[in-house]
Structure formats: C-alpha cells, structure tokens
Length: 413
Ligand SMILES: Cc1cc2nc3c(=O)[nH]c(=O)nc-3n(C[C@H](O)[C@H](O)[C@H](O)COP(=O)(O)OP(=O)(O)OC[C@H]3O[C@@H](n4cnc5c(N)ncnc54)[C@H](O)[C@@H]3O)c2cc1C
Image 1 (cartoon, rainbow, N blue to C red):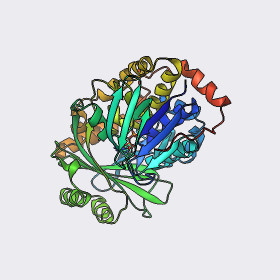
Image 2: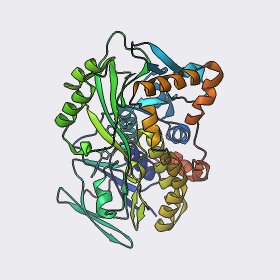
Image 3: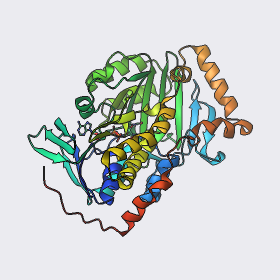
Image 4: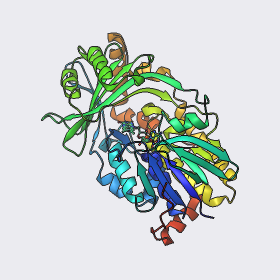
C-alpha cells in the first residue's frame, strides 16, 4: 500500500531517500529548514556500494562527469615541496583520492533534480512537534501547519533537531578531537589538480583541492579536544582560526585572507552520532542524523546513499512497516559500526604536534607511496566488507523502471 511519507532534510540522505520512496509509489514530501536548496559544501567521495546506488539511479555517469577532476593526493613539506604522493593513475582502486570525487553541492543537486518532480518540496520550515500513534505520526511545523503521515524519515544531518525531539538524550556523541573548516577561495595560477595537504606543528593542517568551477577548495583542521566551538557564530569561528593558523606556514596566509570574504564557510567539530536505535514506531533516522561517521570515516555520502536505498528496499519488501524499519536498521548497522570503529588515536597520529611527529608522518607516507608498497598501503580505502547486499532489493529497481514519474501531488502542508 502506498504510504504518505515526510522526509526532513534535502541533502544527500534526504534527497536519495525521497527519490527511492517516491519511485516505489509512495507520496513523499520533503521539508528542508533552509529557505532554499543548499548548494554549498566541499569535496566528498562516493565509493563501493554508494556507487552502485548512484548507478541504479542512472546518475553515476553524471556524477563522474561533474567530478572535481582531482588526480591524486600529495603531502607537502615545509618548503612547499612534495614529500609523498598517491596519484590515482598509479593505483588499481580508490586511494585517498577516490575515482568519484564530487562537491557536496553538485551531488546534492543531481539528487534533487532527479527527485523534485517525484516529490513535493517545502523549504524554510521544520518540525516543531511530533505525536506518534501506532499507525502513523502527526507532525506540527514551525510555520504553524500540521499534518498526518504514515512515516517520518529524519535526514537532518549531524545536529538533527527532530532526532532530539523524538529520541531525547539518546545520542551519545563520540568526539573525534578534530575541528575542521571548509571554504572556497579564488584559484591561483599554481593551484594544480592534486589534493595538496600540508601539516604544521600543534596538530594543524591545511589543504587545497581542485574543483570544476574555477575556484579552489580550502580546508583548515586542528587536532584538539572540543570546547564548544561548533556553537559559536561564524565571525567568532573565523577569528579563532586566524589566531590558530597565522604562523602555520605554506599557504596559510592566503587561505586566512580569502576566508574573510568566502560565501560558503562550513565549520564542524567532528563527532560521531552514536544512537542505540534508529527507529521509534513510525519515525526513522537516516544519514548523518542516524550515524554520522565524520569525514574521518571517509564514507558519509556513501552511507547516506546506501541507507536511502536500503530503507526504501525494506519498505518495498515488508508489508509491515515495523518489520521494514527493523530490517533496515539490521542491514545498515554492520557497515556503520565498521566505519565508526576508527580509533581516536588516528586523528592524533595524522596531525602531529611536534616537529619530530611531522618527520615521522612524512617518513611513513614517503615509504607507503613507493611503487612496491602503495597499492597495499591504499587497501585501507578498499570497500568495507560489511556492506549490505543490495541485490536483494532488485524489486525496487524493477518497479521504478515501469513507473512514470507523475505522482499525484499529496495534500499541501
Ligand atoms: C551545507 C553543507 C556543507 C557540507 N560540507 C561538507 C564538506 O565540505 N565536507 C564534508 O565532508 N561534509 C560536508 N557536509 C556533510 C555531508 O554532506 C554529510 O556528511 C553526508 O553527505 C551525509 O549527508 P546527510 O544528508 O545525512 O546530512 P547533511 O548533508 O548534513 O544534510 C542535512 C540537511 O538537513 C537540513 N536540516 C538540518 N536540520 C533540519 C531540520 N530541523 N529540518 C529540516 N531540515 C534540516 C540541512 O539544512 C541539510 O540540508 C556538508 C553538509 C552541508 C549541509
């Protein structure tokens, strides 16, 4: 039976979930807090099973065509020289630079464009209250509207407010002791097609990555335990970054001055979302709202795409919604737990504080990048063994193939 479904959040997880649920014939509304579609964000990659989902959506080639064109990853020394590099053309699989590297906004736009005709989108609103019953959920919105749905899919990212309403106090975040800021800066003549990554003492690193928009994507990161910086406003965050990075060297001053005028500053104190459950009656969490693994896990977008597909597939396979949501959680847990299992020592090892630590890091990277070792060294980027088996959801795709995209618009909120 088709359901009336509310999805909250219109980024990777929300758009992908809306796509697959609408393609299965459900009446889907997507509510996004932002007043319009969010196009910003920096480099993310899609690997393994996430590529399969894009392929099933018919979007893989478009995503590859819109890729950032990054050709590999290089670590930069104190004098701007390359200390170690992993060129994609030298590797037999995905390395630090994956084959499918794309900007978050470009991937989200592809998903949104594929879904906007199938689902009803509503921007500039968010959930205020949720009342659950056995057969559905009544949602009140900040705008004053309210409506009843068979299912509520929460895809609001790491800081999800609706998660806090439905699962109060249940998230036990795992702070990864790493703070990151991403922003776009003007391209300069010597910016190349490599992800160039420079480390300075005191756990600081800065990196520059190419894009296909004629600009350069900058990242500043600092290894330290968190002090609530994620709650500061952007001006305070920028002032703090200026102070921390003013003597970092390499291209720090170029980045700090460009940071002042950038229009897509994104700042995050990395924490994993650790939820003991993702389902409460007819409410289900997905994407970062359920399991944020942080950029350290390297598969946030892959998991968001996969979770959307598995969720819609289980709803297709199970007549009983409770069984479907339980099966979705059981299918996704192993891959999520594996991705979250990254030891907390890793950010510390990858972001040394002393000169000696920097020498050691560079020495290890230099060794690992040698032809005899580099394929073995990049095995850590290979497909995780605990990916769900997507072949059991074949009915989802077959159903999509024969379906026209014209859904009757569901009742307006
Ligand atoms: C603007 C932006 C920039 C990003 N930049 C980077 C980056 O540079 N590098 C990186 O590794 N990751 C970045 N991320 C995170 C990355 O997209 C996710 O880790 C991953 O793709 C999983 O996506 P998600 O859809 O689960 O969550 P997200 O991509 O975080 O999307 C959540 C969506 O929900 C919306 N939302 C939030 N609260 C509510 C609410 N209460 N009601 C309705 N909607 C709500 C948000 O506006 C957003 O559109 C960015 C996310 C965003 C939103």
